[in-house]
Structures are given as C-alpha cells and as structure tokens.
Image (cartoon, rainbow, N blue to C red; front, side, top):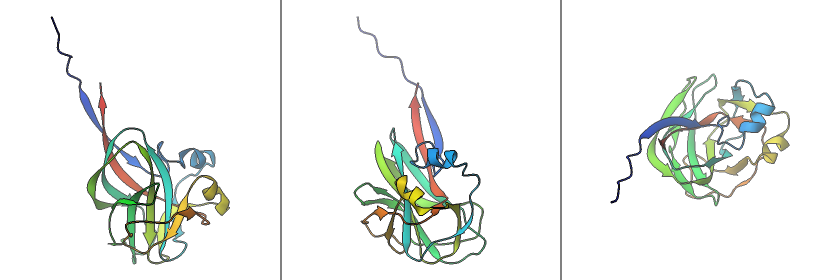
Length: 181
C-alpha cells in the first residue's frame, strides 16, 4: 500500500533587500561600525552608479524598488539589480526624484534564483539621498561595493570597478518568498 505525502503548508513572507538586511554583504560591517540611521548625503557625482552585493539563499520575487531622499527634489535616478557579470536583470528606468522619507518605485515582478547579485543606483546629479558617509572610501571597497559610470536609465551591461566613494546609499527592494512547512 502506498500513501500520499501530506500536503505542505506554504507561508508567503515579504521582506526587503537593503544595505542593512541579513542578505547584504554590508550588513555585518554596518552593524559593526554602529552605522546608525541613514542621513541626507549628496550623491558623489553625476552619472556614477554605486552598488552593494547581496546573496539570495532561496528563490525570491522582487516586487518593487525603494529609496530615501534628502531635502530637495530634482534630478533623475535609476535603481536596478545586476548579476556578477554586469548584466542588468531588472531596473526602474529613469525616474524623477521626489522628496520623501521613503518612496516606492514600480518595478516589473522578477524572480531571482539562488546566487550573488548587485543592487545598484545611479543619479544624474548631486542631489541628496539618504545614506551613510564613511570616513574612508577604502572601507566600502574592502566590503565589495562597486561603482561604474552610467546615467539613468541603466545600460544592459555594466563594467564594475571597486568603489572609491565613501557613500553607502540607502535604497533597496521589496521581495517575497515562500517557506514550506
């Protein structure tokens, strides 16, 4: 006699990918440095993209992007996810910056497989965004942050370089995943 396996309950969770989340390459360093709250910081240069690495330990769906702005509206930005080879997976496209403590930006629902990725943001000016400014740029480089030249919207590929910037911008993505029980 054979028995059917009992059904598994699936619980759907929502979470975020951000510099401070447990999947980010920056989580430990920011906590170790007592990163505190992100503050208003000028984007370091027009058309410079800055990114941080993150690991996906189980498949997730990315639902939207978000950022926190500084004091003055203006300019355009793009937020996206790249694979480690520099291929763009999904992005918001060129988006007008508004002043808001926290702003969600529409993004095509995208499934990410298990692996390592880069969350990247670029801006076309030096407007203020929320983030952390570290005392030495070498700290960001040591923890795998990258940069490249690209104006909003992102091109389909990027050539990454170790960052020389002190800024860790505060932006990320809303995700969903399932937990089988």
